[in-house]
Length: 323
Image 1 (cartoon, helix red, strand yellow):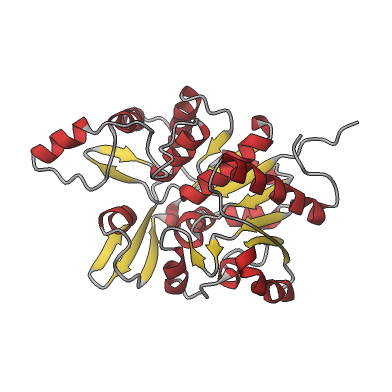
Image 2: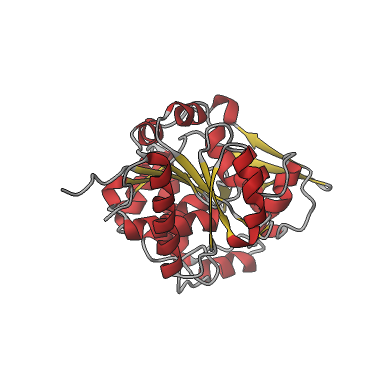
């Protein structure tokens, strides 16, 4: 008799989160996988509500993502954006024509009063995504970055400024009054395994954990919790996570990553290049696994997902691998 298939809940944001989500979707039945995505990067452009991390997850799981840049839809045209530029509009946020259809629908449904969670589910289902894609909150959150030139919305810092300014401080607006979605709380409570993707710990994962009730639900869960570090050789492959760890007052290392998930993190998967961190992490009571964490293609994503589930078995004491 085969072991029951585990229920897995993944916290994810950004390109790294979407890659691990794809890997897990490749090795696990979709009805046993839930993904809670980051909404604090959301922002309005051209009168439309854009949700970059949720869309990256959706497009990736639908097999529609632009693999070269890691976000947006493959084979895009930009006729509307070209027209807006001709009219003198700022067009630094590159939104393709078919991508804009997603934002038009999202904005229309929001104005009709539909819950953002239901909108995300509707879009994912329409694009053929079978995995449960959840929002941590239906309320508005926004990550803001303080630079020497002043405060910027995250997309202004990340896209328009291309992460060039020094990061002095990171702030999350709206979190004090945010309420968790019941779907996210249920996915955490019902999980046999909780996972944290190799996403930016400060601006992708921390905003999920900051929603009142989310961190408490994780702390109350008896399920083991594992994270994959976004660092390779003490640095990020892409993006500003290393600098943001320092801005958040944490060490730019796997120890700094683990600090953000203490005290409920049970294990951390790190790259072979950071194997020297193992003793320090284990001295804190963490289980550690080393592997090649870079996900260059579909085979890498599935391999890392499988290794992560095998690692979880060593903590759980029973089979957690999906058939």
